[in-house]
Amino acid sequence: MKKIIFALAAASGIALAAPAIADHHMAGEVDEAHIKDTAHFMKMHGEQLSAAIQHPTRKEDAARDAFRHPAETLAFFHVGPEMKVGEYAPGGGWYSRLLGHYLGGEGQLVGLFANPLTATADAARQQRIRDSAAGFGKEVAGYTGLPAEKFGGITLDNLEGQKGTFDRILVMRAMHNLLRSGTADTELRAMRDLLKDDGLLGIEQHRARADAPWSYANGTKGYLREADVIDFMRVNGFELVGKSEINANPKDTADHKEGVWEMPPVLTTKREDLKGLGESDRMTLLFKKAK
Image (cartoon, rainbow, N blue to C red; front, side):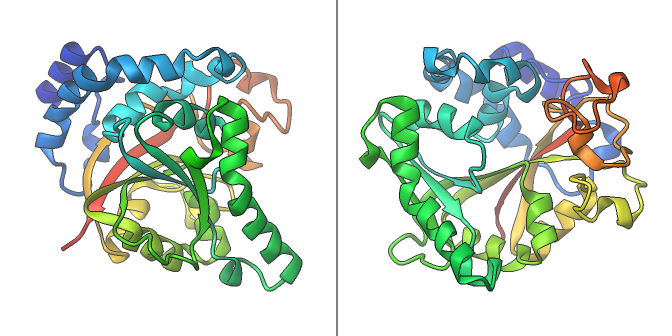
């Protein structure tokens, strides 16, 4: 397996951390064909992906590229420029801005927002969620200068006409919030319904140590154990396709009292010893719908 990964890195120019798939992170089956195909993917779409990453409107966002490895991550997820892609909980817009440029020609970016009815009992907050979904297209258009019609947003209680139409769904550094909210099962099953039969769901998530206690790895600190995420996805109808160490950071001890937010770029506690360490250690996992 290691030989396959290193050959991929050489063929595609992807800078994967060594070892690319570490022995102690091998829980679950890995689809070696997908790993091999990533080199072909980069040959097909690398130029378009690079153009989106280097777009002048990403000048401020580009400072995080060295830590978030967007080219390698999207290539590992096989996100093609012609695809319909759902971004769950878009948040600050770092990936939305990049995906907007990348998908705004042939593809489509759709913001996936929480089901308001299960996210909160407060009617005003429910309406804010619906308003965020309704305004997502205009928001991304503002980032990219492209027509708002190229983008859209939906809440996960309104899947009418959307089921089985998504090529990819991305959950970027948001799994801990799903677990904290208590809605992870229903949200993930709704996302599963949105995917085509051959669709894939990619996860990037702050990674706790494998032996971290549940009190630390339950989502409240932002960190989750990789094995827990894989098992949770399996329970909700997904199978592991592959994993990568693209976003690993061995400098992160993942044991911070105030959680991941002590790490860059947030640095809530202003700890000098954490400055310059890059961002958190993160797992990068890819799943398909279980049959």
